[in-house]
Image 1 (cartoon, rainbow, N blue to C red):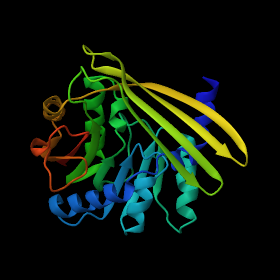
Image 2: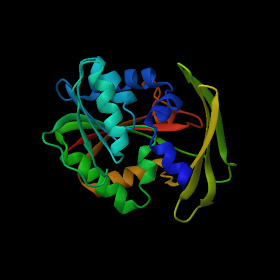
Image 3: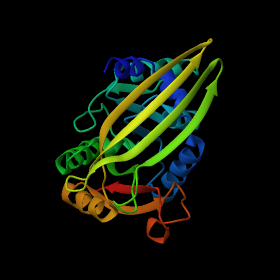
Length: 258
C-alpha cells in the first residue's frame, strides 16, 4: 500500500506514463462536438480528468474547459500545468457519482475508461444523473469504455515506454485478471518502472474494474432517464460505428441530455 500511495503523490509520473494517443482522441472529440452538438460547443467538462491530458489540449483549441478529479494531487498538477500556458480552467476535487459545478457546460467527457471505477449499476446511473446536472439541455456526454470480446479471453497485457526530459517510465498494464463473471468485475494491475537521474524505482498499483457490454450500457442509459443515445464508435474512429467493427477494443459512446 505504501508504494501505491507514493506513486499517487507523483502525478508527473502518471502524466508521462499515460501520454498516449491523446491528439487523436481530442480530434475525435472535436469532430463529435461539430457533428452532434446542438449549437456550437464552447465549454467542456472533463470528468475524472487525471493529469489533464485531454483538458489541456482542448483548452489550447479554444474551448472553455473545466475538470473534476477525486485526487487533490491531480487537480493541483493540472492547475499548475494550465497556468504555465496561461490557461485558467475551473477545477474541482470531487466524486464522479455526486458533484456539482457552478454553471452548465455544453459537453462533458470521461476518458481512459475511468467509468470502469464505477462497480455497480447504481453507481453508473448516479454518475449519469450527476453528469446530466452539469450540462445544458441538449448537451453532449462522450466517454470511452474498454470492452472484452468474450470472458474466455486470457488476461490482456500491454507494455510501453515513455520518456520526458531525464525521466523514463516503463509501464506494464494488465486487465481482465481474476474475473468475476456474475458481478462483471475484474482486477487491473499496473507496474511502473521509473528511471530518473540515475535512480530506478518500481511502483505497483491495482484496483477492481467493472466491465459493461454495449447493450447493457444502452439499458443503463435508458434507466438513468436523463440521456438519449446518439451513437457509438470503435476505437475513436468517427468513420466506424461500433456495430460495424470487428473485435473493437474501445467503445466510445455519444449521449445527449434530454
